[in-house]
Amino acid sequence: MSEQTPPPATEPTSTPEPTHTPEPTQHQSPPPEPTNPPNHPPTEPTDPTPPTEPEPTIPLDDSPTEPTEPTPSEPITEPPAKEKRTFIQPAVSFKVESNLLIDLTDHQRKSLTELKTLISTTTFPSAATTSTTTAATPSIWGIPLSEDERTDTILLKFLRARDFKPTEAISMLKSTLTWRTSFDIESLLQDDLGDDLDKVVFMHGHDREGHPVCYNVYGEFQSKELYVKTFSSEEKRGRFLKWRIRFLEKSIRELDFMPCGVNTIFQVNDLKNAPGPGKRELRIATRQALALLQDNYPEFVAKQVFINVPWYYVAFYTMMSPFMTQRTKSKFVFASPSKTAETLFKYISPEQVPIQYGGLSVDYCDCNPEFTVDDTATIINIKPTTKQFVEIICSETCVIVWELRVVGWEVTYSAEFSPNAESGYTVIIQKATKMAANDDPVISTSFKVSELGKIILTVDNPTFKRKRLIYRYK
Image: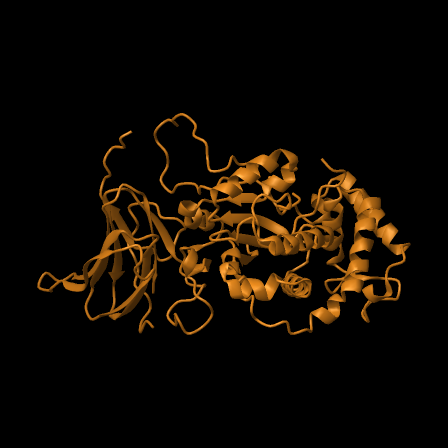
């Protein structure tokens, strides 16, 4: 930990993304010139269960895909070349709608009023009411469906899932409450279903807009032992379904359902080593889960980002895309293995992204006592065959701690301290070292500053690929 206040940094000579305060100086040598259709659209499943290749049960989110490539940090000065096909052609970007009454159209406000009237005259399952509500007023996810400042947010989810048709929205709502009673959701929340699947689905950090992020790691089912334990019989598949619903319910109850609050979840679906189409048991479980999610959890997805996407999934999406609504496609983002990290960084800050996906975040433990998700990181694009310099100005005696990584490495890294005094000597902190792709993903270093000067971090990219440098210090 630092003994003194972090030193100031000089202004950068290149534009990193995102901004980091304080910011060190960055110098980059100049690069060489380049050589060259149902009645009701299904509501989105809040977290798709393991995809199984060409199955027409792809999670249909119900609501526009974004480009998988983040906006480059350097401005483009040359006229655009001939348009190239991207990994998957994007649809119009989806923007989460407001739940404030003032932002609704006249038609939407009228539909909301009509739905409230229908709720007051509808008989609901008795188990849908709680001790905090009257006998005639149901609640869902712990929120009463009348006379509560969070009620409108819930009702608007059902209305948007049914194109603001009140009679169809009340039918969906009543069906959901009936299912929740039969599935005994409230008791399920108290059940202990084990921790076997904790690495398959987990919450970690937030995106840039404050949505909690849920990671779905389908490659974990490549473990034969886990696969058999989870899907080999109808009873085990039923237990998996209960575990998945319980996890989702707990995540939903952490959301803020106030009109200006965060009430959706950002989904990351890792398809690396995902089981193929031959897994019959997995296909059955997937169909069951998707049916429940689409029918009973409307409008809980902020974005569906698929990473490490194999070619067959792209082919399947291309085939199914004409049958999806624009709203559904707008929430999908696809990234090939080589674009996974930069795609995630577009939506999630690197200090919030887990290390295994190119970020700096580790599980909440003692693995990294120096830094937390509150310590912001800086991203710099390193052009092919160039060197990147990062200067940390040391204006007082203290201990400087930093961590740094280049996604995929294949670079040379060094660090040194250069004193301001002409009589001083340069201190080699880290001699030039070639970093291979299989080396530790993050370098963590500290240096005790005993005189004024600067720490210079040097990353040499000898390849013909653009690299991304991520670092933070204090």
